[in-house]
Image (cartoon, rainbow, N blue to C red):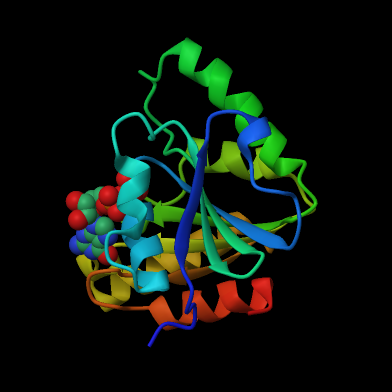
Length: 192
Ligand code: GDP
């Protein structure tokens, strides 16, 4: 049973003026495109297809807000990492995520990283972008693609690289590995 009982899609924002009121608490989910972010959101909220909204053509460069409980939100950030993202798109979404970072209700970031690939320069850039004042939790996704030993090595390496800046765990939306742990961390942050 989901610990988030009232999950619902709130809104897609193309500009800061379209964000929901800056009250309560929210956690951003970010990751390189194809890292498994939508699958992670669906697994943690136990709403199959919830994050599909964020994949609807036209919404992929928007910020998508979901309400997990009254005044407790998850914000799905656009995937990043493809050099081919047009400069024009960067010009629109950079100010958008900058505005998100300034919100008092933003308390932390879940960073989705493909466990096989490990942290990329794009991930490092995102950590730099969020700065030192927000909690960060890294989900090493698709852990089912690794052996137990490989998974342990991936977690060790990521933890070393993060050097205390963020917590990290293995995660698999397919096998369910770490889904409960991720949900507990998220609920703990949000106070739900
Ligand atoms: P997003 O672009 O970061 O939102 O990534 P998606 O959630 O859409 O997943 C990208 C691809 O990875 C899809 O083909 C998924 O089926 C696959 N995927 C996502 N999570 C897992 C997982 O836990 N295990 C495996 N094996 N594949 C996964």
